[in-house]
Length: 501
Image 1 (cartoon, helix red, strand yellow):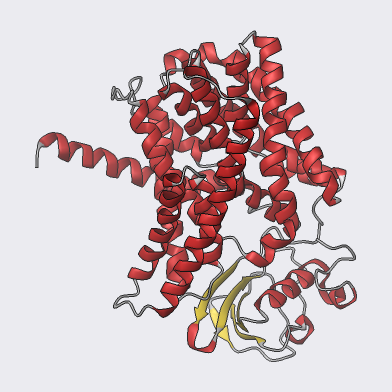
Image 2 (tube, rainbow, N blue to C red):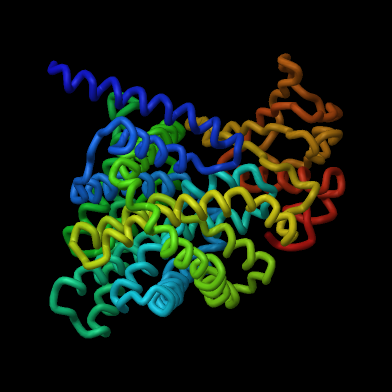
């Protein structure tokens, strides 16, 4: 091995370990870890350790590879039972909402910054996609209705595809002969439709193959699942369709199938997604030149305010109102639409195409992501309380981890009783779990015991609950109901409230 290679390994391992440790630090502060990763990239770049990196093409290629893994993990971990009720509003936010956001941001930056229409619309297209990694690092600790969380999660998984397509179209049109507007609309519809169909095909093929396969090692199943999601992207790209949408659809189908070693699959995908996020953010931090960022502050603030105060609220109102989402929920959806790595990656597309003004666009997007992620992430909890989209009695988080008991077609649920939860003081028989679900073990003060019907739960308890596959969702709903209303949950329906979340 050459000394240069060994030094690169040493530096890479050090950055990876610091990034892993930063996850705990950032979660305590309530700030998305992407900011720490970006800072690491800047620190080892030309203004820090002096490593110069300016390969835009390589960054775009590796960025797309990382996005494939991140979107695949988002699809694999999306529960269909939670995703299905919000599929309509999430689809509207990911299509109509994206178009509205592009038009509003493009108009504002054209008028206020004097940019030509093509570059102004590129600003809007690049900033039109929300980022799941940035959003859920903060949302996990908030007391939010499941419908709001599911809507934000589904939107962030689905809006990458149209945003990528529109950025590519606008970047190509800036350097090549343009097509009529109706041609581009038809092309966009084709790419989304065929991409979704390819994802369905890859997901169904993967489900059928992995259910019948008898692979010699459990570790091969996670690799095979990731392989099917990458296959979905590649097949979509070969057909000139949306590979990112194909990845997400395939991930949802595979993640909701009763596959062998499902928990190992999800754990592997989660770790791979973390690695992709760390590598992507550090790489983007390396690519930026800090000396140019001062000049990018003004366009970043103008575009960010246009996005935050005009484009996002209008796009949410247009998309969510037909689905009877109230004004308070709409306001929170608007404020929680954080931007992360995706806009920065999208900004490398016009940069690699040498679109005039693309360098300033990249710098402005980088500054915008840093400033507005800090601003929004730190205010999500107060905003949720002020908008009254959370019940004071609801616990900040119910941590439910599952391990499939494959031969019994059952799941093992782990439930933590956080301080302040109305689960505290409730007897086990008052949980009223559905037939097929039962509390099998309680861990209290480091000691475990088998509970009886009259066992009273306390804050800090950890419960192990066995639930058959058919009643798992009902058991989770009942636990959330009791966590909200305590013993009165039986009078308020399965969600513990007189409204449908």
